[in-house]
Image (tube, rainbow, N blue to C red; front, side):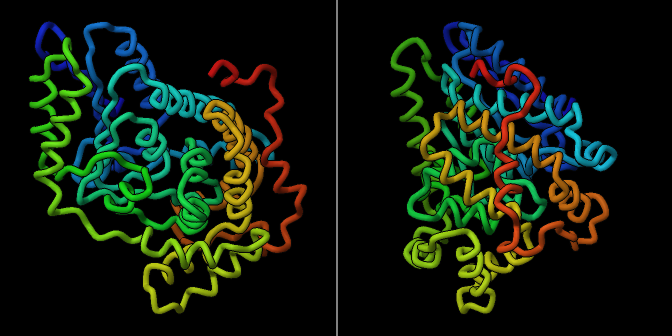
Length: 367
């Protein structure tokens, strides 16, 4: 199952629910059985009056969760070109339902987001009420590398970043450290990697009957004060003004042109981001531009319904299967994009990725 569940006793017969992703070799990448088991357990804990608080974490030192396990899914896409595999309908519907559940969880929900937090890991983390980052945290939405797009609610949280930073991060897959995450409201607390046991010890000693919110806040604040000296330097907020100016353009091809021109820039971080975009999927860049523009006017539930349609359409079109083939299956790192020129992709192709799934009632209609 690659998941562990524990209920740790606290005061007055309350318990702390602990869910641990346990697929260390794959950096805790989410498979469909993991998604379904986690969703079922979180629902049960939400309904259990003796569970006071939930902690979600990943086992192993390298990652909280480095994304979704998409290889099996893409193998089915490659067997049935132009069609949407049944696994895709189930995988994306269940993953987005889980993410929405975390966003709307009725109890204190803590996510310990150490190490790699990518793609599907960001989907889990961003819904949590208390998002903890550590010195090892490296957050990102790297979907441009595989011809997908920043899903799992990425439309929602990237659209809400200051200026054009959300667009920039979606286009370049740039890595976000702990300080960046706090600066951009993608995290709430900074603790050292070795403070997890102290956090758990504190949680079981809280009196969940009386003013639990104030007590939890005091615990987190005290732990964070001990960790503050290890906070890394900010990367992206200091560069916001320059990024906003670069992306102050009328359309996506102009944005890509402006960023790709930075590959030889003296700023190594911007140069690396530009290089990633230059090698990434041009169609994905269009999807990022569109999804961020559309998501500003959507509710969270509407975002997940939009992304469900986008994800199924990505399975139907060639870029996602080719990107995963090149990066994760054959690992030749040279995807041959069907639409290699960002300025030459027909508008009808981009629009088709937002067309609703035509299969009866929407599986996320009840969110």
